Length: 123
Length: 107
Image (cartoon, rainbow over the protein chains, first blue to last red):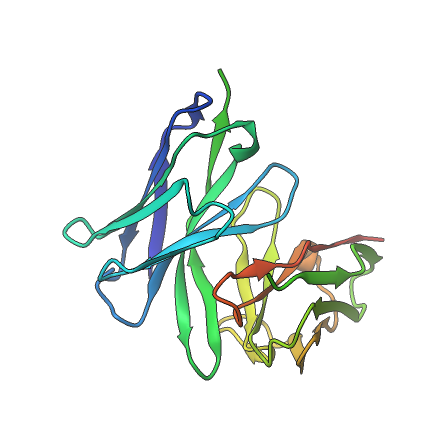
């Protein structure tokens, strides 16, 4: 059974960089059939897609965050990471990592999710 | 951006009820529409992908329909574990977007 687990700092100061890692177990991140995503959810609000990366390292980002986001993959450790720069209180959210599966016929979908980790931006 | 809307934003229902949630896209997304269930403090769970395909392990009382701009999630014979928030999500655009959610609670 595939499992994803987020880790990283739960408290980040304004203007600093939020860094999270998602460890993948029960399967290889090297599979060309999947991409690996980050999604966030501010407290009491809805879901926002941040971006994704394929195992070969081709990322795609939400344009609203693109100037501040980097998603990278480390196949040797079977994990991928999120860096979000110049954070403000508006970046306070639960951050989820997820696997993006699918194909051209059916579109893609997030089929496995991590449990989520709350990141608070505060001085 | 493709905007997703859902109606209603919340509803109250009883165990055994049939519940219908609607999702509308701001432009045609063909059948590239997914549904998720989220319980408090938990990650979303994929229920339906490609508008009407049931994810493995999801009970058959969940079903999805629609294409183009209008989609429906139906839960027949509502069970206690189904009280949750439901989100639709489009994958037609490279910018994946979610609906605002529909909260289903106990009447």
